[in-house]
Length: 205
Image 1 (cartoon, rainbow, N blue to C red):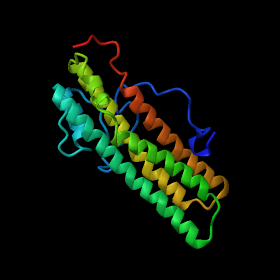
Image 2 (image 1 turned 180 degrees about the vertical axis):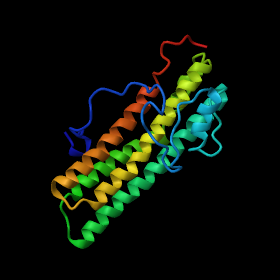
Image 3 (image 1 turned 135 degrees about the vertical axis):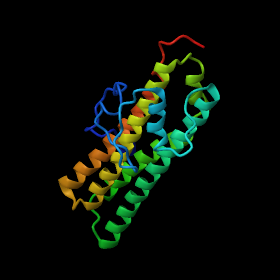
Image 4 (image 1 turned 90 degrees about the horizontal axis):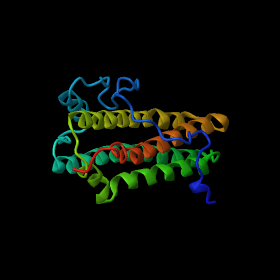
């Protein structure tokens, strides 16, 4: 097996269950610093996401869903791209200082993150169309908003993971920091795969 394709041992094997709401997950909004609140209406659920994504169109109509899906993936991939740049900078800094320990491991984590970024940016058209084929009422739309808000909140944790890698002196400290980064990468990847199946039980529209 190519070492770049190996899965980190710290990552749980089973995909996460869709959250009942962002507040129940105990998450906080990334760049805004505002807590994610459990929405009491579709309007509030939309406002939670719009706070992360300027101009977010929402999931009210089929066309809105396609646009909003693209906006969501673009917002997350942009934030993850900044994290990737931090990892690349960390490698450069360690190389310049002559601290070569762990460079290959950081590179593997960076490549895993890059694959996730590419998946988000270049998801085929059929990904957004998953939600076109089902009839989504208010409860389903709210559930999708809350699921996406919780995913965005997890994306906010990448900054802390990157800081851990940057400050790690090496050895077990660096290993633990990289495991945290890899676990987040795998979790967000699984969340997007699971998102396609949130409404498999709904009738075709």
